[in-house]
Image (cartoon, rainbow, N blue to C red; front, side, top):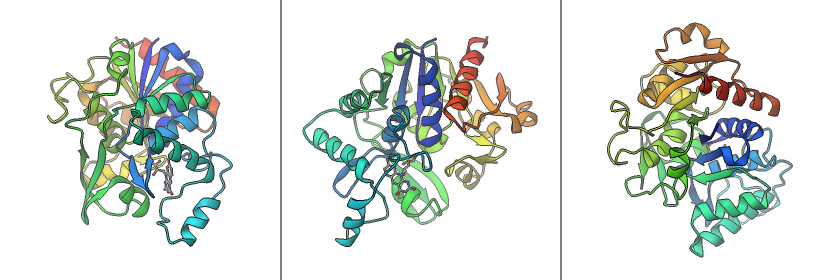
Length: 316
Ligand code: FO1
């Protein structure tokens, strides 16, 4: 079965890794959010691309999910000493990625080419694509005004109350080379358990067949033009990691797998929810798989991926 996985940060990367464990390279393409990208200390930082790639390569820091395993912080320590901004931590191994990506982008290489070369260098055989080679920057509108994503997420630790989101540049951002082809030749799109608001929506806006400037056409069902199944990032009203549940609540929506199902409404042919939400699942109007969606090991990631694939195979 040919799958395209849409992924953002840590949660999404885990399921992408599960899919990569069970699908051959020709049957899996991972399309990654770039709305979290920003320039910091003069470097082009692509957190979700790096989290997905490090996870697929087995290089990711198992505690944080982002950055590298066995990381050291000599450069950061010395940067602080020189008075450099220190709220966004760049590890010594991670810095190589940022330095070389920044150099290549400045030399005019598209982000999708940089990502492809880095995947080859890290031994990743599956295709990992940024959603676009053009810059898209998620801006978070809060009760303290509009904040760039990392300012909100890391510097302010997601404390400001969210009022809405803007994906700066999405109106003119073209889907990266290979993304549309991958979706049109896929049997299904798997929306990984990432934050719907700031990790998946940017990808849907860039990839959807509707003009990106128009509001996401959930009602017309134009959407991706292919069968899509989401794995809910919210379990029993909470997120395993990250601010998705808090964002739903601050936007006046009760955080739940039901809220996730309606968030993607017309895009979805099915949804995978956790066993803790088996009662709630009865209220979900589309086909629903109820299973353990907590991925606490590589084997668990592969199991959830396999169950999701089997579920897709049984959809009408
Ligand atoms: N998240 C943090 O909470 N604190 C950090 O200092 C931090 C540094 C960092 C460096 C590189 C990278 O790729 C990710 C990093 N992240 C950090 C995570 C990042 O903010 C999130 O992974 C995404 O933007 C949201 O998924």
